[in-house]
Structures are given as structure tokens and as C-alpha cells.
Length: 74
Image 1 (cartoon, one colour):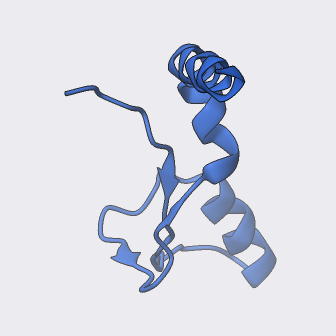
Image 2: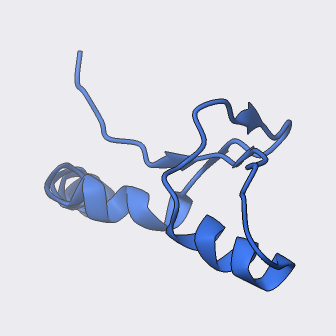
Image 3: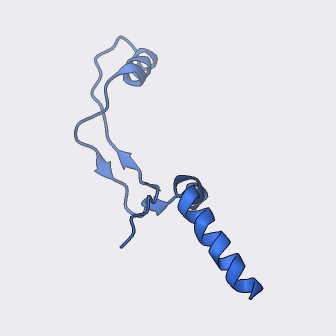
């Protein structure tokens, strides 16, 4: 059995409680803060990144492509 690298992504959401003098200051602090430790998965956001599959598996992809091309010529 072969192993392939399949790039995937998904979205998580969370809230942060930030002590600040203003909303603008709180936003700036949030942008520099560590990631929240209790994120929630956004339903339906999981996807395979089809644009990167060839790149991650380039050697195997091209080897397979060449074999298929040879078979077509026969």
C-alpha cells in the first residue's frame, strides 16, 4: 500500500476576552495574542486542497503520469 500526502484545511472559531481601554485597543491586542485554547470547528468547512495535491506528491504523480502516457501509446 502506498502513502500519499493529501492537503486539507478547515476553519475553527473562538472568542477572546481582552482587557483594554477601547475596542480598537482590544482588537490590536487580540491580533497579537496567542491562539485561543478552546476553538469550535465550523461545520462544513473541511476540504481537500486539490491545488496542492500534485505539488505534495509530485514525484509519484509524474511517475504515474508517465506510465499512463506510455500505456496510451501502445
